[in-house]
Image 1 (cartoon, rainbow, N blue to C red):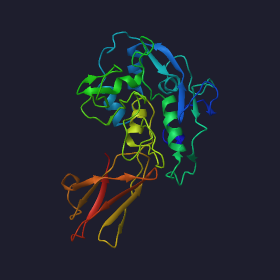
Image 2 (cartoon, rainbow, N blue to C red):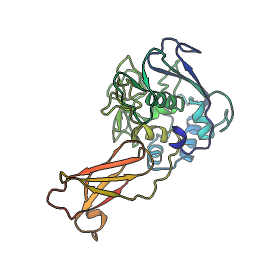
Image 3 (cartoon, rainbow, N blue to C red):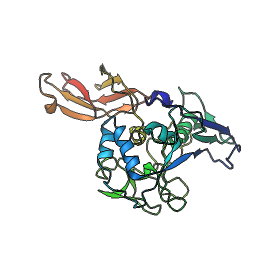
Image 4 (cartoon, helix red, strand yellow):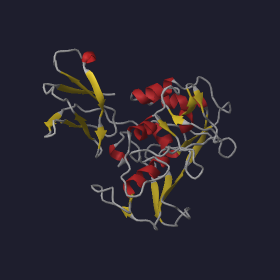
Length: 312
């Protein structure tokens, strides 16, 4: 699961419960409890995030952080697993102390088969597990909880370009890594769901506030980016080798493999010698299962066409 999605050399300790056990009662589908540590100053937090940049998303997100503490209190808490990733005080990368707990309801039907995750009348167990584990890793808000509790994920909530949201009552809140210029995903606003989860997605997303019965939940690029900006590093892109398969209906299917949940755009040209900037961008690829990408092109009568892929 996550050990193949991120490369940080840490040990995350999670206790798993089934049904009404441990600290959990009345779990509807899945639940989590995340240990947090602190307090840290804003400078401690941002310096740690800055020193763990490893890609475009977290580099952009750190560059857009305010120069001074946006909550004015200069008191920040950090989920324990994220403390390990960022090298902050109060935890070590491979200690054995509990980082969080998760629970699965025993009163619903799950499909556990990783090769058949969309089964009528059942919930995708892998999606529920990824949802809850990602919360232990730090995909949770503080938003003044307990009268002053703010967490790193709060820094990436926006209602407009340059306008961060630190209030639980704000509407139209979205996730952004470029100071609010781009809305990557809207957060849930329903009071019956968690504020840090996504609004309902199509296709269903692992981090949606509400799971979809009978459908597979996808761990999307935005899910990976949310953890990326918190300090979790993704593997480097692999060299891409395209396979183009002509179909009987005249379409062409482009396939390739790479790291999970990456952004790719398919380009096409009738002239292989043209500079990449002059190729036509056809669109983004789809990923299913994880790490396997596909794009379906309909070139019409123009069958002499070359393809390449770029990221993003």
